[in-house]
Image (cartoon, rainbow, N blue to C red; front, side):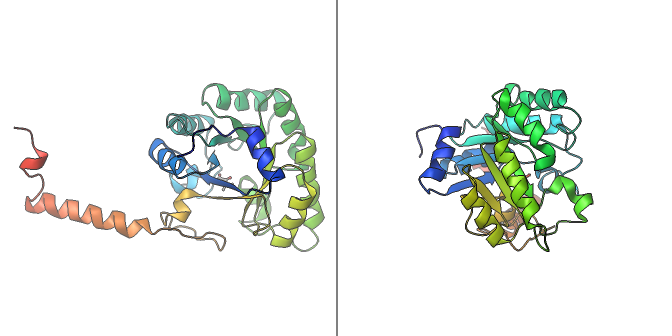
Length: 267
Ligand code: KIV
């Protein structure tokens, strides 16, 4: 098990050393405890919690209070991994003041060590302001799920003459002071180009193998999200049938009286 806490300088150094960065989402204490012991570098408390845990169709309904609840639960596992809190829709778009206050709450009340903000050139002023008060920011460009209505669905971005805009977004995020940037849902060649041009680490999701790191949603890799199965997800386990079999057996043993036994009873 890892002994040392992972910090922002460690993440920056990993790019210098060509050591790939592993990031996964987590929303609670038990998953964080398990994945931290398994050696993940960054834990993202993603607003994907709204889809994979709360059952919403999109990430848009997720609130600050809901995110804070999950960030605190993750922190209680005292992970060695860097903890990044996703900023929910409308928590950072209205004004710089509100963005700084809400990002500050994630650090101060939630215990996160960095925040993630979706957007490129359009959000550079926010990233600059938040970074300038020493709150480390992870950017997020390409397919930004909070922009689902503008994009008309979860569609690959950066095709058909749009590549330069994504490159400019990534550069704007870096120039504004972000310590890393998520590249989501863009062609692998474009992600490779951005990763070689930027000095900060790129973390890809559906962005091919040439990023400095990779991120996936934990429920997706464990086979716990039947709603969506995007092409970029690799399932490392199929937990649904295992959970289903355990629950069936419990129900059947309660019904036929084989649970509880004296072993599970007090004398
Ligand atoms: O909310 C989330 O989980 C994310 C990642 C998938 C990048 O933003």
